[in-house]
Image 1 (tube, helix red, strand yellow):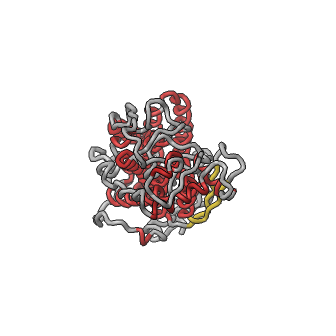
Image 2 (tube, rainbow, N blue to C red; image 1 turned 90 degrees about the horizontal axis):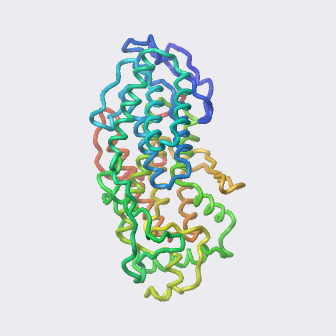
Length: 462
């Protein structure tokens, strides 16, 4: 990204001359370097600072998280992106801070340097084994920025934000791990599946993790699942029985590809990839991009915390158990049969779906920020030769739902409830955290009827 000065209503205007992809080296943005200390010019240049360094460190964060389990991964990404936002916003001041104790950085501080220092600090705390690699990345990013007081002040702001986030997430309930042992073998009660360790159900403690935005893990608890003797249960039972078995002849190849890809790709990888692809087509300010990535990742994490509260509240069985025992469920419309799921069943209760919650929440944040319609490609090295092409973010949500049903590990009602839960979490977080200064509180009501259009933020080049 390069910049030119133009006279336009007496202000600076950003002229995008080059779209910088997420994986390219980071270049400094000279407007916040040493020397630009007057209040008016600093304010204008702060807002126009490009977001490439935030996008780059989002990719570094995803790469550093790597193959960690999905729910600790979303917590990690939320902590990193939250710290990046707090550091940048302490300089630009466009939004309310995340922490009440955050101080405004000195005038002229470099927000790019702040973003790098914040991301580096939290990632090093989370993944100390990667400290050497992360330090090298930090030094390379900072070397591209002009030395001086602005850079020094930016680094200090980033380190302060990282320290605040680390303090907030220390002892947040994410450790030690707890496991669930089924207390009953009655129909509908979750039972361990072949993927489970001897200790029992995984992530039993995740319902106790402190959320980033919502008030508690039970705030958006899913409604009760369908009764075993209901028509809805029988309908969704029949669907997964027909298309989810490993030997099913009714699963089209495209649905098999979807099931395999989303089984391999955890939500933090997929949705941050989607966000970066959208951002590569835009030229947004560093503050707006930091805010969107923070709220999206906080929503992903809060959705997973919420979903585990509901999972272990209802403790419903997986199709792998339900279909084999279909003649015991008291529903005359279900018929038991042997059943082996197409993908491996996760070792925790079925209702509602964690992937579904993530999809409902992350898509909602991105749609609110940028609108629904964007060309996006998703792939994963564990599923070679499969690339999913999208033009509508809602189609990704639909495919995530299909992936879990055609994969044989969820009922459709698991997905529907989870998507609604994720949207509720997203709507709450979007309205209650990291809000624009001078906002007017609009309450907690959902607003799904306007999700075809983005918010009033638009790309700087439009």
